[in-house]
Image 1 (spheres, each protein chain N blue to C red):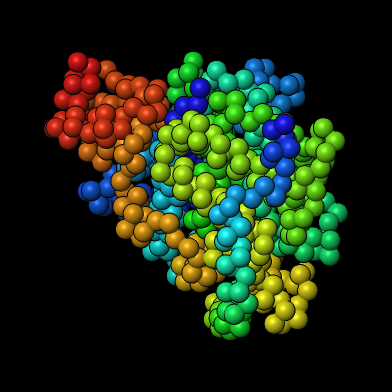
Image 2: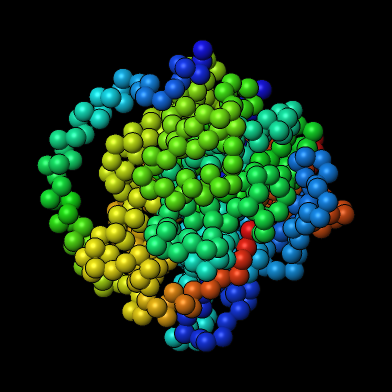
Amino acid sequence: MAEREHKHKTAPPSRQEEEVEATPATSESGEKIKAELDDLLDEIDEVLETNAEDFVKSYVQKGGQ
Amino acid sequence: MAINKILGVETEFGIIVRGTPESNPIAASSVLINAYVNELAGDPQAHARVGWDFEDESPGNDARGMPPEGTMAPEVETHLVNVVLTNGARYYVDHAHPELSTPECGDARSVVRFDRSAEVILQRSMDAARRLLPPGQEIVVYKNNSDGKGNSYGTHENYLMDRAVPFPRIVQHITPHFITRQIFCGAGKVGSEAPGLTTAEVPFQLSQRADFFEEEVGLETTLKRPIVNTRDEPHADAQRYRRLHVIIGDANLSEVATYLKVGTTAIVLAMIEDDALPRDLRFARPVPTLRQVSYDLTLAKAFELEDGSTITALDVQWELLDRARKYAESEGLAVVGEAVGVDVLTRWEAVLTGLESDPMALADQLDWVAKYRLLDAYRQRDGMDWGDARLAAMDLQYHDLRPEKSLFARLGMERLISDDEVASGVTEPPEDTRAYFRGTCLAKFADAIVAANWDSMVFDVGTDPLRRVPMMEPSRGSKAHVGTLLAEAKTAAELLDRLGS
């Protein structure tokens, strides 16, 4: 039956290959990614709305479509 | 039979006026659009003063025939600013928001380009308005779909379809796609706006819009929003075509998300036209399932289908992709643009693979992942809980279209379209649809054009009564079709003569 054939985990070959390759790369670069994220957060501190509470309160829209 | 998927996106933007305690969003939207149009008028290369022609507007028509009793048809607002641009787009005030409809595009990649060009138009409008307003005042535009207080505004997609396809078949097969595609095209949102839910229950969800949908099928767009909208207003030959008006999507900043949103939907619709989706994936409870999918960041929850079996959103998408691959093999993907279609399949698979193994690795591709990763890191650094106003503020600021304020712009996400293509799309139309005829006529003969809309243009060449040029076939009027004629015609009168001969 077509239904059985398409039940999940019928991954095409290319999909499995990608997963195998991706795993070691991710853990190796984990520290680097975290450092980049920390830098990004510092950078974002500079542009964030200064009074978050007032800003959120004042952002009121009329309903649309 | 599947037909060419001509498609486009219309976005209602959030708008606020800073530096003044009192402001009216309709007036602010008008100032914003007029400021842009008036600056363009100073540039002889870029006419945009031609008004919209409401002749073919009938948003009350229902694809099911007669709408159920008590249904409210949307009103057409004819008195507000409403212009056509030389790229073929429509820029106007709608429901207290500035709205921009992209021109009709020939494929998903072209939609991404003109959606980005629309952002540039809004940015230039903000700059132009800043020059007009008193010092200290500023109009700011947000490309999102919710104010976080229960008010939502839409980002609609439109797909040309074969009129012969029975509407119930479209509803049956597109609904599961709409419920599950949010796992890659949701724009992400802090908290929930559904009654009774707090950030304790829903700290963050995949989609901006899921909270606002209450019906499975219907005509409304502003209340009791339906998963499948039945507005039957083809803006084309109504004997041959239907325009599927899709109201359920989020506004995406990510190019990959926009690309996949319209690219996968166009393919699924082509499969519906060719009856290539044999399995019935109808959910037992579509509206609650839509919300539950949005609330489940693990993507692991299974939901009941009408046949009693259960399935995750991710597995619905795997099955649609699997079907699409077989469809591509047997029928080809010419109706969605062969090369773009093949590329959409590759990216669709890559994104599903990523969502299954490590969603956070898609932070450079998908809006909800990018937003979640950023906000969660910020939250952990400063020890906040999800109800903190600073996170709600960051959520809004992700969508701020001012380049220097946009959080999205700082994330360096993957691009599909070059800056040059985005910039040229601000003034130049797509070449492969009737938008080419509309946009080129406006650029060349603006003085002779009285009004324009999706399926016609009205010319005044001074002598005869006004002449309406119908454009009922969306694929005609392309550069291949009328490029030479438009290049050779020296006047609008000459153009009309040659079109008539």
